[in-house]
Amino acid sequence: MDPLDGIDEIIDLVHEARSVPMSRTNVMIDRDHMIEKLEDLRAALPSELRKAAAVLEERDRIIEAGRREADRIVSEGETEHARLVSVNEITVSAEHEGARIIAEARTEAQRLREEVDDYVDTALANFEQFLTRALASIERGRDKMHALREIGTFQGEDSERPLPF
Image (cartoon, rainbow, N blue to C red; front, side):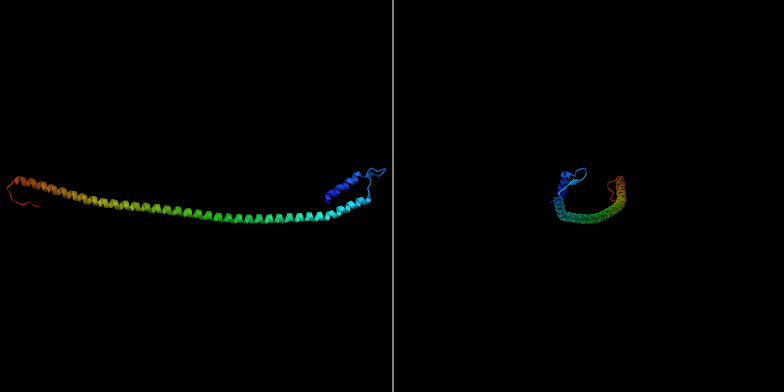
């Protein structure tokens, strides 16, 4: 028997009971019948109370299991957060180191380009000087040849004098 149904039956019995003559609030109820209903209610209450206590204990176990699971999830989340922050810090550090290495490489490449440009400019300047001297020498040689030709032409064709070069 459900205790709430038993309580409802007792309330209905009191409502349906006949009033005591000359009284508004007193009623006549069958004592044995009322005691039987109350004893049934008393018998039902302990099992219902045990069920309610069991339900409350089960609720407490579920809540505690939920709390443990929530704590575990939070702990795992914090661990994962720390790992991701660490990975992020490593990534940022690696990116900074990579940027530094690239900047150094660009600086070194620029320095080497300037050295190569200076070397090539010096080599070309030396070659230019060599060619200038060679051209000057060739020009002097040609001038001498023209001069000797002019000298040779004025002396006549039958002269057997050797040329000075």
